[in-house]
Image (cartoon, rainbow, N blue to C red; front, side, top):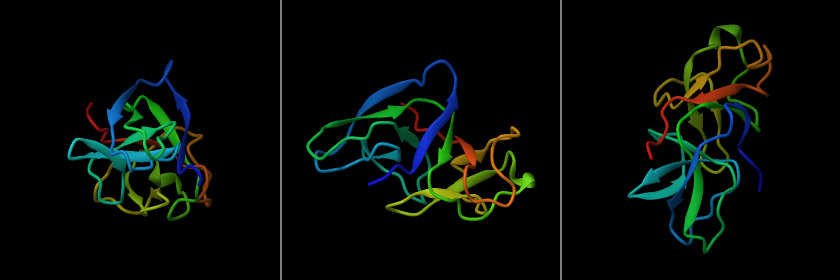
Length: 140
């Protein structure tokens, strides 16, 4: 099991909150999560709002820690869908996948992520190291 995302920048501390999840739901550290019927679950390509679970939660646990807001930057641990281009800076984009989530940097439908606009947000011509912010955070 491996992380989908990791935090690479943010303000002084990342605000989090503990949220209920089903006992049998396993959320890995670094998962992108959403809320369905009042419970935290792993997000997917169609999720309308998302948060980051820095520590995850195992089978049998009833709560998971999730980020509140979006005053931090994430980087995808796995390669993005397409190579990064300068003109993608500031673009809204989606998540792609089910088990392993990646930055879908050539699709704009749910727009849950925004590619960061700073100079260190990606390497032109590479799928690795693209920095994003959560554009549509779960409101907790």
